[in-house]
Length: 328
Image (cartoon, helix red, strand yellow):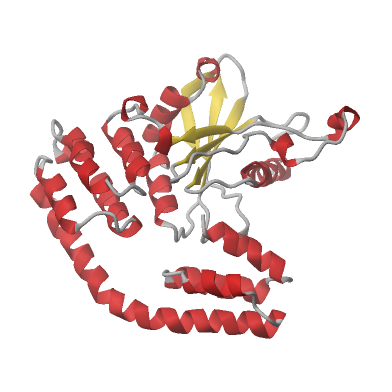
């Protein structure tokens, strides 16, 4: 499931929960107890296939695990999905992933009579509360009870990290630091929270915490938010044992970021104009709302992906769907 993810939030989510140890810990702590009792989490293993449409792989990150049921020669799948803004069609998107999983398993001949259960988990950390129902059935208008038998339904498990209290966020150092960072990443007080988050590492050595994870966390902070200053990060790192060993690689990241920023600004304008011209030539007049949204995009790779989507889209509505998905 090695795919390019432009969104830094998705990339961070995949880097952490793509680790089986962190995923197992999350499930032990956050799955409903009745599910945990049924599952042998020691058998948890990641599935390597991705079930996201090829044209959208640059913008989404899915994580799929399978785990055995205790005392039974069978297993279920656990599908992780990440959201940084509320999306009314989340249940529909998850259903599409689930159908693709079942289609692949049937094609591989793994199941002949009954399909495996898939438990979808959606992890959300946006600014506003998630005020959307988690059932697929809610997407339908059912005018009378006689139609209910013909409306499919399932639920996804929602974890609204950004609206949990710090005390409700559980886990060992890596998982807890990850969830706290995701909680505060969109908030103006993130800089003040960093020292508290990094203090989780104070009793551990770099060998125990893993230099790779700390660098992943720091790069996420550098790329995902403007709410903190470099001094905030430097002060937070000072509280980590051997934190001085991390600073050179982060300083290099900042230096590279500053060098590339000027180049990127020059490319952004040209990329936006190329995309708008392609849309105009293919579909005629481009709505003003599209123009303003495209001009607000700051990532060259996203614009490149959108240009490809514009060329392949069969209608402006189809392109609108892709544009809407990358804004999450």
